[in-house]
Image 1 (cartoon, rainbow over the protein chains, first blue to last red):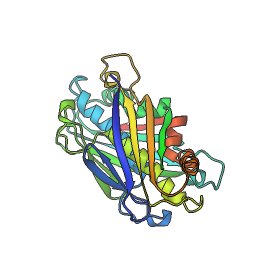
Image 2 (image 1 turned 45 degrees about the horizontal axis):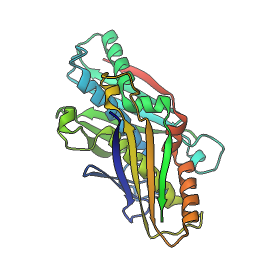
Image 3 (image 1 turned 90 degrees about the vertical axis):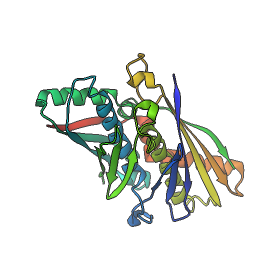
Image 4 (image 1 turned 60 degrees about the vertical axis):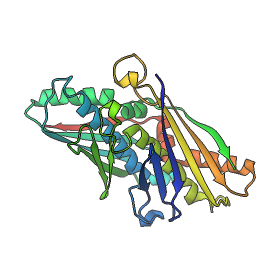
Length: 145
Length: 145
């Protein structure tokens, strides 16, 4: 069943800083000082990498048992390339992420091949990876003055 | 210049809960109890909507002066549709977001037409919106056991 995942964002009043809220949970996103911010939080592109890594991580944690994959611990390193010249209108280059990369580091006794197979399943299941790979329509539902 | 935006995610040890970190800033992502979590943070899909809304918001705050657009305050409501049956392998439906919607609410004396024009510029500039609309390659750089 199609389920809407919701969030509301509003300025905190401190420079370009934004308060993000969903289901009562909140965090602050900001920009470094050299990008005009107060540097009191990560920026939206870093938060998007966090959301993607956490999506991969929650899939891994949720499906490990069903996939008969055991681990003691893991971490996921995310990296996404953006050329700020794009959204700053300095150069005619893409404004969004040009590539997203991740590394999965398992602390496990499972053989390398099984780790790679599990990682492949995790990526193929991850909703945010699917969104990135397939793209999605972005619709403005209203501008209220 | 292509700039990597980085993050690291690892389990907190509390169910499927993940600690997300970028440039020293941290937040917790989790799942509601009915999705197997401890419900101590928003989930990755909600965090992705936050990152997108904050990206739109920071673009709005950063470019308002250059676009001669004045406002007293604003908020952005985000909504993205996902069918959990997809990533749960219950139905053969897309695993990712099927649509992302937003509403921009300005507290401003600017006329409606100028608000809509500014909102259009903001969406066209937002790096996360561009990523969603155009899609992006997701690359596994390594699986380390």
